[in-house]
Image 1 (cartoon, one colour):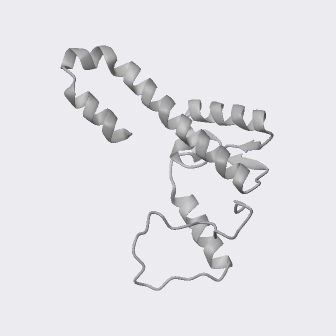
Image 2: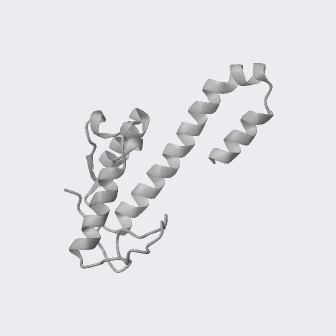
Length: 132
């Protein structure tokens, strides 16, 4: 989606970009938030969660926070969001994910490479991990 927007912007003249930029940004945000909401709701229902939490840098987006709060209320989920001052870095989430793996006795060799699709929950698990 980001690449499509970038390609579209690159094709615009400077004047067209100046007049359309706000609409492009708002449309991108709305599309991104819609995707995140769909995935969060699907995951919460699949794993029979009682709550949805938002964290990391994306949690600073007021539109996302508002829409998540609405969707949680409409679907009977509790909603947890950190104070904005804690929404700037993913390091704490990565550390927590590592802790969860370690507590389950899962360790990796020292030659472990970056793996962006690494699962945080086993496929046999019916509940999402609880962050503390």
